[in-house]
Image 1: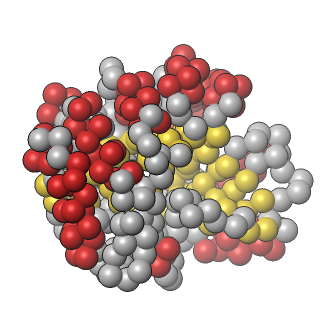
Image 2: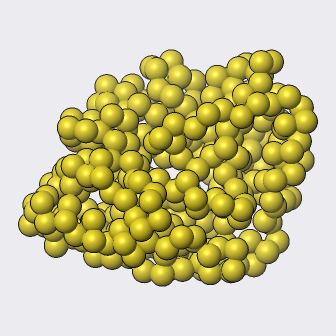
Length: 322
């Protein structure tokens, strides 16, 4: 079992397979993607070694991330590889949803269990302003298709100061009849966007208190659950989750590790640097990788230090998929 010096166990791997994305979200890649091409990122055989190594150490859930993971031509093959690895019981992905109406059935057939879709506003003009793409209708059709084929759907919305009031009510109205989990995510500071963070960051704690006052009740977390605090209400088909990285003890329940598309292990989203594990992947050395991972876990810190203004090596969120 992968366990650090603080007794935290790691059942959950977030695996980035590309840094590329064709959206231009204000909080991530406002000028578009200008990084390396896909041929520099992990190959399918390297991913196979990686997943086998993590699974052999107790990882049961893999989330395939980017950038935008569906931009890779072998995305379905990556899903299938993860699904067919012994020990992996849940395969998820995070996407902007632009290709979901077309491809959700193929993803499900390959073995995908869950999809997280980024929808920062239900207002088409506001959505286009935030993301640089006028595709809200297409993405909402993708959500309907994902539900239809049997995927567990979660919707991610960055909680931004300028949009919070109207955004919250629109989403709550939507959840009356939409069986998805909506997670509001506190904006996190990254190296490229300190001023945007200063202008737009809003704590999720007042929102949590508001939900509790309105009768929303906490949902018990599973062992492979992400960082969201989730709430349900008898009058709503959907749930609301809050991801509040600046809250007290946020890191105490950390159960996830990250591997970037270039083959570097990040012990934290905001670690100072990635640790190159690609030689083990290139050599298909599963046993060597497992031994090395166990040693590296002893370097994991107790906290991300975001509250001290330390953003580590994360210049933008497309590097690691959040």
